[in-house]
Amino acid sequence: MSVEAREARQPWILLSPALVAVTLLLLVPLMFIVVYSFWLRSAMGADTVGFYLDNWHKTLTDRFYRDILLNTMKIAAITTVICALMGYPAAYFIARSRGNKMVLLLLLMLPFWISYIIRTMSWINILGTSGALNSLLLSLGIISAPIQMLYNEATVILGLVHFLLPFMVLNVYVSLEGIDTNLEDAANSLGATRWQAFTQVTLPLSLPGLAAGGLLCFVLGAGTYITPVILGGPRDAMFANLVFEAIITQLNWPLGSALSLLLLIVLGLLVAVYNRYLGMAQLAKGLG
Amino acid sequence: MGWQIIRAWTVVVYGFMFLPVAVVVLLSFNANQFGSFPMTGVSLHWFQELWNNDAVMRAFRTSLVLGLMTALISTTLGILASLALVRYNIPGRNAITTLLIAPILVPEVVLAVALLLFLNWLGIGKSFALLLAGHVIFTLPFVILVVQARLVSIKRDVEEAALSLGASPVQTFFAVTLPLMLPAVAAGALFAFTISFDDITGTLFWKPGGVETVPTQIFSMLRNSISPEINALGTVMIVMTVGLPLLGAAVARKLAMKGGT
Image (cartoon, rainbow over all chains, first blue to last red; front, side):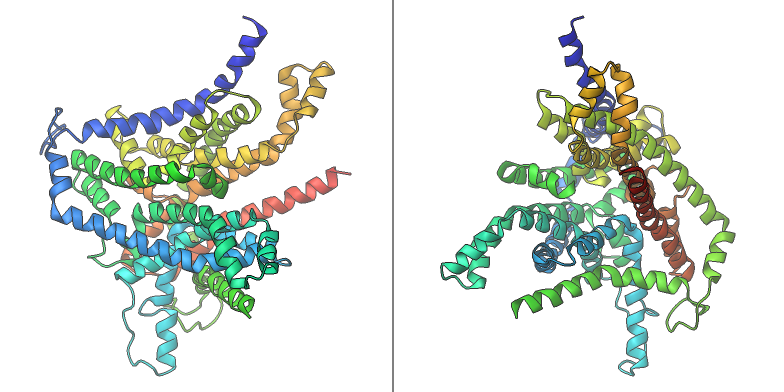
């Protein structure tokens, strides 16, 4: 073999283990559940192989599933908006501050290293009946008995915001950092107020970062399983809980396949629209 | 004026991110027998309880072994792939990168279901092997992103110098490239370990009955009620996944300063 041919083959040899892993552990399994979603669950023994539309019919027409899907989207959307409102000013502060920028950035990375379940359950210490807030209100005499503040939709959103906020701040920060501050100064010197300079120059230029952060918050929020279980009540199930219920509790794998594919399709469409207009590069920037 | 408001807002946002976690750590040292407020004193009682809790210690061992094996496999695959992506001009690079980071773009629940059903069909049911496969595929994209970012900064000149001085490609790799890559390797491995150690959603789908990792152990303990033991376990996890990397970075910096001129 010629030297050139060897040289050309080398990167593929290096890539092959990772490509094989992604193919065998992600792509083929995804295709497999597409097939599986057309099978039928058998009460006994192996599921019936074939081409049945029953699971898809149930997934797409059952009111219960549709309501939970819509509710999941609603919760993810509210979470994303709150993350944007809370995160944007903070990201702006980090990007424009001089002295303690490194400390702020380091602190911002910290939540990524702290277990998701610990951050979620930490709110029980704050809002639970024997938590910090109730203790405080009791000792101040504002209330005479602990109030139940947990286990509702609001606390699910609270938990999700707490989990996803760092993703938003980081993405907005990355795009703000890439904007030349001279642009804002130029707008100022041309007579724009600081607020005008911000809304007409900086904000539009930072929209890609906001969109990337928003996409991450929405997709991760809509796919969440743990938060509603820990911080929600019995009626706050989200779509991923339905999937878990079907797969693990009821062992109805064909139905569970259809349900997870529906979630993948809905969120995948969103990612596709995002990719069409903004491309994946911005997202990779924020993640790396 | 506007700046002051933004500053105050940022303080509130950081407080929101860290106060609940700080309370977890604080309460884990609580002497109060119910582990709630008001705190009556400082004690290591809850850590001692943890140490004597067989289920927790088993979960710890499982998480450690799983995390280390995930880090080893994921980092190896990730480094090889990153080398190819950074060092060679290969056709379809963007498509390959997108493919390799695809596991983060797929919701974890969907990934968990797909892998469980497919490997089960192949005869690998819920088992440690399934857990390991899941953790590897889930951490691989993060390793690739982190390692790639660091590899870009290594100059090829040094390697070319070694090659032109008569070193073989293999010698060059082990004597020049690998030492230069060590920070990237360490960062990738640390990242993979932490993500694996913290993972819960996929793990709940893949773990065999009776096997718990630390997060799923916390999850099942939460079903009863929040006990101070959970806070203590949380503190231990924070120390493991935050403290160790920080310590590692500090040690690495010190070594680099000693070694450098």
